[in-house]
Length: 128
Image 1 (tube, one colour):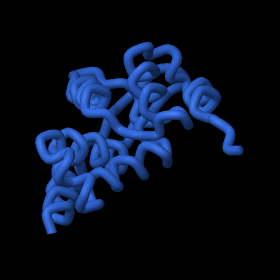
Image 2 (image 1 turned 90 degrees about the vertical axis):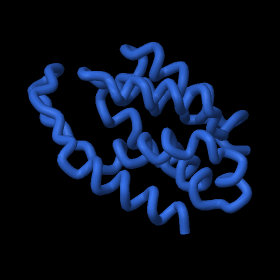
Image 3 (image 1 turned 90 degrees about the horizontal axis):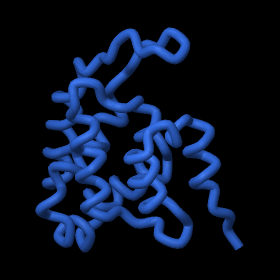
């Protein structure tokens, strides 16, 4: 039987300090679910489009990457999620391309220089 490590993983990366992120991620990544849902992905999309987004580390969970990639590249999933693909692409691209510089608990900078390039590359690749 597999173990559900979602809660401990999120606690270790500090997601509990961000209740909306924590709720969205746990609702998708627990062993009993392990599935994206458009409402939670939309929440992540909105949060990471804010002027002061949450830490990118919360998007760098391998399980989340796997679910996003499956949703974008599996033919059956892609057609089912077509109206939300832009949000899925954004969350994936943000997670893989954005970097941050921290000084202790304080974020000093967010580098989104490669975000647009990665967004376009994933969107183009997911279309083919």
